[in-house]
Length: 190
Image (cartoon, rainbow, N blue to C red; front, side, top):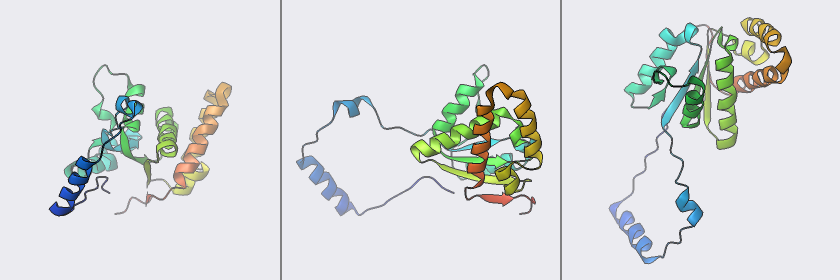
């Protein structure tokens, strides 16, 4: 999974492009000059439930990506004193790919569920790549909110009974993400 693309061309083709660019007059729109191109800060954002996976699959995935020189964001990059929510949402927005590690207790974290909703919003708006990983959880349990996810949502529905729309957004986000092509490590093999 590499998100940088490289192209090569011959020196002759490069000089032809440079010559034709020098010959033409460039017209720059003032609005474009004020809005520099959107630059990504991270290649990969990893969404995970810390107590389930931080010291296991998440740390191994993070190390493997860094070894391959893939700039990766996980929440241990937060600076002391930095507000968590805005920093995480900004990191999601500045990442090219989001990897979501679904685990037994992912749905019991409103932080994780809010991250998931934002990841999918960025995916829909900007075409970001989202890769689900199902770790020690069956993809259909995530998709249909069965098992530990049913238990988590029973608690969330009680806790958020005055804002049930938020709970519905979380349910929809889980269903959408679980329908994406990803990696099934529900049996923890491999």
